[in-house]
Every structure is written in structure tokens, then in C-alpha cells.
Length: 213
Image (cartoon, rainbow, N blue to C red; front, side, top):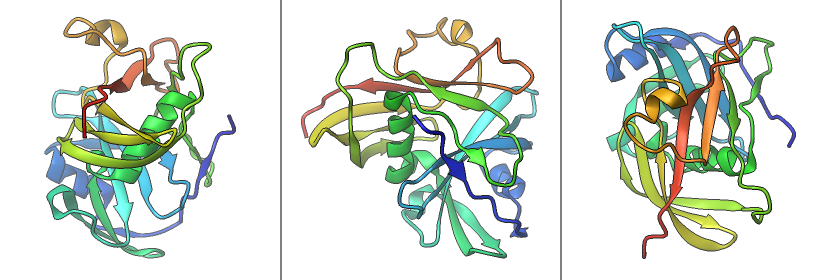
């Protein structure tokens, strides 16, 4: 599967992403990000990576749009010197972003490279499915319940509705640490920092629920 490239504009942002992220989590120290790419090119999908006040590595998933999607999930606006006003939302409340996270998991995809040559703060990799499982085409997503670390809803999968739960833990820890509290889904995204590829962190988990609509 070819790795996608996220276009990074040389732009001035007012306020900065750090300032918007501090509305989500006070004391957040931004060190970088990883990105996914919307196939239609309309929605920016980025997870900021940094440290909280206790020096724990965390992620804050954002989506960016030119028009507001849902005020319940809007964190603020950024004036982008190239793209204009961008509405910043919790990515788990954005169906396009959620669909791309699910697609990355089931396709065994990777995070996007950056067009400006900088390195993502996390190199992420979807698990893919078990060997022999049929390919899944992920279509439109409908969200039923959203928090800052979970999205629940339905996705069009090979043309039929399937219920799902997508979890994105705020604190990034290795699988062995996370599994102390619950059984980690085999359908997931893991990621590692550039200097520590031997210790992948759990970035997202997917579970199919097939709830009736």
C-alpha cells in the first residue's frame, strides 16, 4: 500500500496549535504530530504529540475544516495565512477523520509523510486484518457517541452498515502496559517515536459491534 503525503504549507497560524491544544489539556507541550490524508482533500487530519504536566507522552487528535462541522466538537479556530479560517475539532467527532483512522487500521496503512521533509513525531502503522480475511472497503461513517477518547457509530463496509467502536487513548503507552486494564484489540494502530522503534505504542483500537441501526 503506497504511503500518502500530507501537504504542509509554509504558513503563519494565529493562534498556534499549541494554544488551541491547551484548551483541550492545560500544560500540553507540543513536540510534533502525525497525519492521515483525507482522500477528498477537504479535511485536515492530524494528531498532535507532546507531553502533559506529568511528562507523559500524549496525543490530541484534531481535524481541520474551512466550515464548522459540529459546534459540540469545535475547539476553536485558527487563522491560516494560506488557507484562511480553519475550524479545529476533536477528530473523533469528525466522520471523515474517523473513517480514515478505521481505513488505516483495516488496510494496514501508514501515517502520511510530510511534504516539507520534516519527520512525523510518531511513525504509525495499521495492523491490517488476519491473513485470509476479505478486503474491506470503508465508506461513509455515521457517529452515534463521541468523547475525547472514543467514537461509536456505524461505517459502510463493503456497502453494508457495521457498528464500530474506535478508541484513541490520550496517554500513549506500550501494548503490555495497556493490556493490564483490558484486552487490546488485534485491529489497531501502533506507533513509535523515531528514536525508539523497538517499543511501539498503542495509538488506536477498533472493535466491530454490528449494533442494529
